[in-house]
Length: 230
Ligand SMILES: O=C(CO)[C@@H](O)[C@H](O)COP(=O)(O)O
Image 1 (cartoon, rainbow, N blue to C red):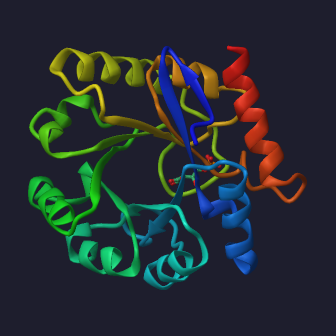
Image 2 (cartoon, rainbow, N blue to C red):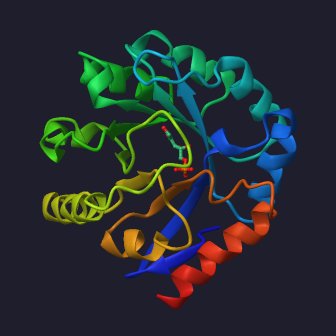
């Protein structure tokens, strides 16, 4: 169920498990879903595309058995086309690949769609929206990275808000009202309303949801309140 509505647009929450307790991943994932998270994002990092290594196929397969929700795999790996079929088999519902990580973006998106999944394209902070021009008709989601990918807990890059607003305008102008604008990196109850008001409808948050100090349900409630009070 959406965590809020802004400008008549439902806002979905996709907690990133990168900040969860990996020794208790099923517990943390289920807590977020029980508290109203709509999707769960699994950040897959290869140590090449980004300077960090995270989790891969076995974790997706385990989460598939443990939680009943949309599993969104954000592939921060080079040549993601090598693995999309494996992620689909492991139980992913949605796959996002980086425009910067594949030479053949169109072919990769086609592969994901042929597997019956929804598909997204992620853009690093310095990648302009123009790279989307030829791929928009084929995708379901654009992921605007609001930090340089690789780590949780980084600070939101402020210029991302204007980028989100430009993208929403472009989608409206070209007739893509249902395309998701997902935003990922440095999002918390402090800035979620501003980001959603700019046009994002799919919010990824890691360290703002999974913290040892407070339960995920409380952190999600803070986000709901921020959207309500906007
Ligand atoms: O993809 C990434 C990092 O590359 C993200 O999904 C982070 O996991 C978000 O973490 P926070 O900035 O919300 O702590």
